[in-house]
Image (tube, rainbow, N blue to C red; front, top):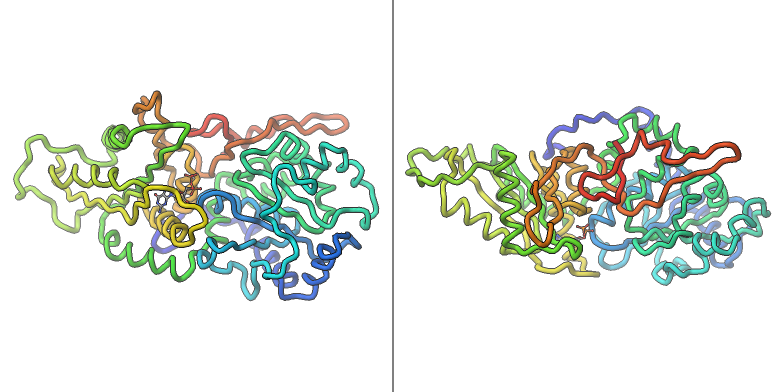
Length: 448
Ligand code: GDP
């Protein structure tokens, strides 16, 4: 934390005591305990027995590092709210990325865990969506504990169907049923935290935990996510080699998405337009002033470019190499890696991504790509409201090229319509006082 700008957001005492209580619960129920083994028996026999002391939510990684960190934090908040213990499934590409966050206990599943979470997907018969579609959820509402399934699978991936995340998932009734089931298995690439704020049942608790709603990821991400020693080594070597001495660090994170295609050349123009119009970086001096007006080395400003593409970095670096800045400042431009393509199931590729997210979070100013979860994580950890590079229009630089985020929390990209019905009331987007559409992604919602 000492490498980042000081966070202006204070942790509430309620959240602190909630975390301490959670740590106790985790220790009591972690995979090395008898209570865990008791819960496991249910899964092995595929039969629910009694209400158990330890209930679990099992997270499994989906998509890139940004998505994974967002969903890990969302799942942790869900665990805090529902009194469950968070465990994580660690495939080979997740090994040696994060430290264990909970003192004296582990969050990793044991290797002999009887369920292969990979095999669960949108059509799975153990899914909440299937149970809704076949009216089983209602049947489980009042059934004896022994008649309940030992686990339920929540499918909150981009291809979820209406039944998987339909409005009653976020409403009290269905949560009561899910709460009765010992194990929740969850696969998600969505940051569902704004949805949890829609749940009348959790409203009070969340208000106490987060008096400032936009700080959820900021606080929980800083608490939960810590790079492994290997990743931290990468971060420190890079930081100390190139960035530490700069008087200001500017992070630029640039992605190209299939829904907003743009050439590298146009993206470069967009970055230049944004950084110059918003006075983030100095303009180039047409006069090419002589080197006597050049600022001292201590006046260096460092630009950290993170992108899959090397060409983009070359263009930005060349700008300030071939020309002087009007201010005479030294603008040094760096890029830690450029793998050219997103690679799947590659541990080293993921380590580099995580190291770069961390380096970005040490910035003083951030420019991130609209809709990128890689960017969301870095700015929320940094406690900086970034400038979003807005999505291209007809493959060209949009006008304006960038817009400042108004709030700090990440965007829930694909929320359902929120309507919770109770016997006499309808909660629609009544809780909209907490929510707004995302500045960078119109269909999404976020906390403010
Ligand atoms: P999103 O797709 O932008 O929402 O972010 P994700 O992190 O979920 O997925 C993108 C993945 O592509 C990352 O996790 C990396 O594997 C890779 N990637 C994208 N941009 C970069 C980058 O700037 N640096 C590195 N090292 N990897 C990147």
